[in-house]
Length: 580
Image 1 (tube, rainbow, N blue to C red):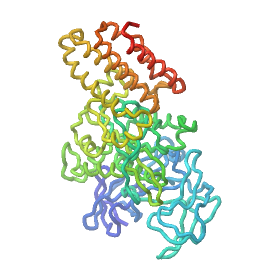
Image 2 (image 1 turned 30 degrees about the vertical axis):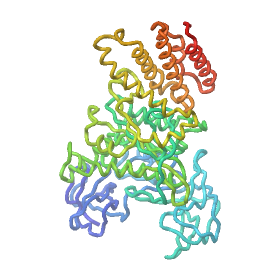
Image 3 (image 1 turned 180 degrees about the vertical axis):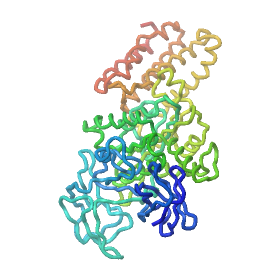
Image 4 (image 1 turned 135 degrees about the vertical axis):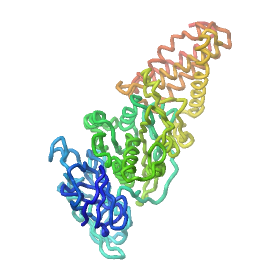
């Protein structure tokens, strides 16, 4: 037990803490505010407090729990809405109303609810760390796989089938150091990555249904991506789309320092969304972590780690997990403010010198792995970055750029033109093309070639636009005018996607490939007509362009017949020397 000697915002100095350890969770002051030890000097501990410190003063007690900041892992997580340190917001709301009382706490997982445990192992079996010994039906969409905690291996002396709470003993394991009682509840320090057997190279895309992402700048399952962009460019909507449509089995959405109205929209919308594949509520496979900009900023720093630890837990069960972090810039701002309170030497733009290593350590916890139980799971991490004024040269964007392999740069000019997603195709990139090419060959052997051709056309269009501004489009050759028309079609008919349209909000892999191939087939047909000397009016004013403009609105069920009709029309036009 120590006592407070100094307070500076969320940073508290307490003396008499020689029995505590680095990163221990402590209860600060008479209100018992939750904090974490982040530094020592003799018996004086520097504490980061996750709640508002107004009203506490020197001399008040500080008590260590002798435990690191950890999350509770077990049945009952799925569908929950937590704050940055895994307190269930709906429970806290019932306890204290809309404005949480300081020092209030509640169990992260319901300790009274009984779950029907179905064993997969039997008495006498030899079990090892991470092995799945039973299952619980957590939701209609998620089977919760109960694993032996890391560090425990031995002979199974007892395993109990039936209904149990998460704290009741379901198994007893005889280890080299004695008998260990196992329950369905685990606790894991948030700053420590969960162990696995082997890390694998990515080999399949995380299909999102967003054409500019899947076709042009894909992310692999187990990959990492960043979405940087200024105010109003659509970072949050893009994250929402990914959370809803990505073919991950589990989604963890972290709202880190976001505006309250945006997070309110997420909290109100997600519980009513339907999972597009099963028709069940999307929340049955989603965990939300909300730490809005008006909440104590110290908890932002913890919220990112809370989210990725929960994501790792479901990855270890063999699930494909997608983590959305919105936004890592707010997390970095919390680091900067804590660093300033600690009087550390500032780095670039006031951020702490260790910012790049913290960013790298976070994204490195993503990946495709063989878990301790021997099954494959993946964790894909997608972080939004909010650079001031859209300046991608600032430290958070640069630190993220060095780590991620997919970079979806949102463009303010595109957003002002109402082109969404406002991802700039000239400044974005993906290093996962080789990893996902094999997957896309199922839909078309020439997928990689079509993508490269489309990118070349868009880059050439950017060069030609300078000439057009000076001398006008009529001064260009017919080939360049065809190129501009094809690039316009790629932008408006393929890359533009309406998140609020019931059909256009999602495009399957087959539809994406078909749309791209049709647009480029028309380009080839026009180039052939130009070579044959046909009039520019006949080449550029073809009736089939109206059908191509409507392709994105064609339902999946009607796609094959409609696309075949368009392709037939293009082939006939290409083979016919006359007009249509």
